Image (cartoon, rainbow, N blue to C red; front, side):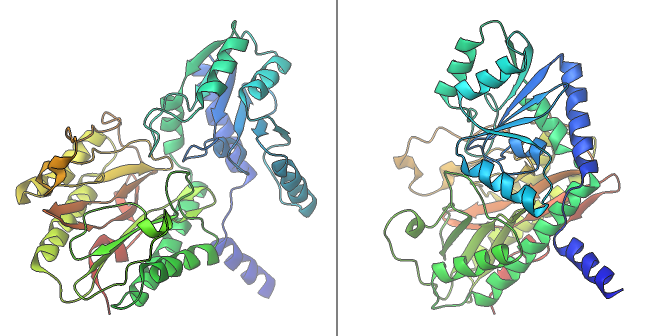
Length: 424
């Protein structure tokens, strides 16, 4: 009885995907391939944020997955360490969805497998060449890799199917949503730890270390992309900037917190390949009235998003609803108000109203970006990040957390990050 209870606790704290989920994913993917008339699919993970090869392998990522309509999945990596690690996992009984693991995550490697499998004249789907992602506005497949494949398989017909792939991946199973919920739960633990440590006199680096400790302790990664750091952190009474603190990028001392500061972070707990996001905003008293106003506007935008995010609506409609409180208050916003998660491929516009930021005139700012895939229809069992940020001049407050859309409504997985908090 005690062993059963312990096993149940382990499953709750460390959930994982079953072979049933493998069969669901592979089955749905092969149905998509049939509809698209594809005989094989080449899914690039490489340095892409979403590591889409892992969707098919549920294993180590950063390679290239070659997935046939019939037959065995092949996963290519750049380093032999992946083969040795896969071997050790199999010895330990850590089951893998993929058996054919090779070195060769290159153009030549892909060509070799496709020729070996008889797909040198086939209709082949490609994921990663023309796709939007955070920091990847024009895809992430290297030029040399792609040109080698095209040049050496002149009789193959390649079809860019990234959007169809993304639309399929967006809709989650119950098992996948369990991983999302666990990621958000770990994020909540990190947010609570951040609140407890934030006070005047400590450094940004101490806050950073406190948050990351909670993620690693509970089996979650932070943001794992080559152009960013595992967590975003900024502080100051009127600091509208975003991104990693400068001391993580070059030799520089971490800022020491002071009275009247806002400490703001974007935390990216990723568990089992599923990401949640937490937008923490913590004020240290005394709080400037203008920062309270930014917080009020951001919260109104969050509530508008929660109310409007429903199956059947278009993403563009949700964006308009969330922007309305900012328009009424004369506020601008730097980062998206909302985007999809797992994958982050649908996103609202950035830099709206940024011409109101004092000093921006020194840069060649030409106006906000556009919404990405605004015609996307919201579906049940999809995951979204509501992250409204409201700016008045140089003052900025960013709040938000991860939500799941269901047929019954929208479920928020986070509490601490959905409004500005006060330290102490």
